[in-house]
Image 1: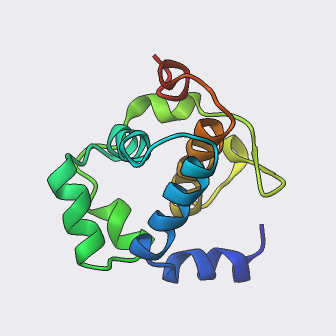
Image 2: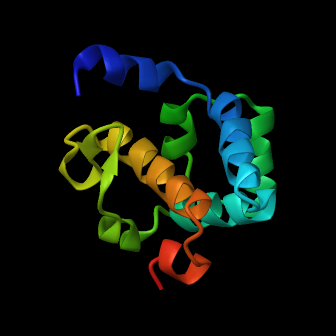
Length: 119
């Protein structure tokens, strides 16, 4: 991925992308609650912390910097997002964003939550 794409990700607001995650899930008969469960599993935010991040309109860099506890099992997330293997992304922030994208993709594809959450 080129640096232009990376810098665009740095400036993106989590609160701007979050509704798109929900729309993508709901189009496939999944729920906002499942999206929230995935975000909280990945970041360690509780529901109140997640809602606070959305209200504060934080960018992805701040969102992930303030995450209480990134899940160590996120290293088990493999596969392609936007034509790039998530496990091969070198920029740590871009990799975290793509991990989240991949989990939402799996939700929309109908995978069971236990599999999505690497349990």
